[in-house]
Image (cartoon, rainbow, N blue to C red; front, side, top):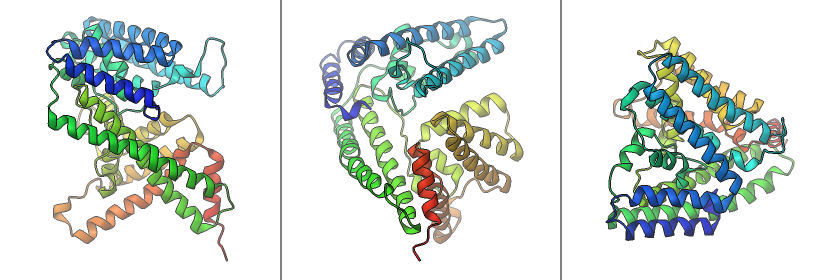
Length: 383
């Protein structure tokens, strides 16, 4: 979101310059970054800043409590996660105008579905590492409020962010060059490609559709969301690394995934990793059976669908992907080793995976009217 506003981009570029000029100050990456994060949110929205100060402070206290308490730890752990999930769900319902309240402002939900995942990851760390789970208040606030990944990820892992925090600010010429190139590439995707592709999609989808047009729009929209989100990730990764933090990759050649299981490790990788790690850890501490893995696959994909939006379209999208991944687990087809199969077989499996993804990708538009219009067009033969 920030990256379509040149003032925000220049502010982050200015922060990178300040960090570079103060690199000899041991705490520059911690204290100056916190000041930048807070000032950025203040200028964007006072309500947003007030909400996140309260939200982050409460969760930091919960983090400290969970890491030091010895009684009923599992119960507190579940309760704290449930409280965060309930709070996010409530705010999203307010944003959908299911509920109304004069104190609610839609800006409060900005980035919340990403930040709650970071909060829960920190709670997991506190629960499993107890008193060894340490984080100073400055570093915890920076973790939640980190501006480059605030609104759309990639999703940062608590442990990795804290490890980066302990390292002094070191960004050499090669890192600077590669990060700037990454930012320029991301801006090109977001501002040039996505803008043009969105205009084309809106123009064509507003017309009466036939089979070939609906098929074209589904493929076109798939490419559109790839450039949109990978562009955002490129910019976030570039600025994050210029600020001294190793932001994880979000897209790892997803179009060369021979199974849906592998696809979700490569497309929006940090989201798939988060749900897989946390759900499997919670429900299956040991290696799961095929049936357990299949059931958890459906649960994870349904949760990912509802995470994207509270609608029957996202629910069905989650069930669709979950059932397909469950079948891969039951049939023992979750992975394909490129070195052990023929080139033709490998790329045929990649093509099949992309076909299955494309069949449901239009759901990401979030508009039921558009989705149904395009699906109806598939049945509208031009002869």
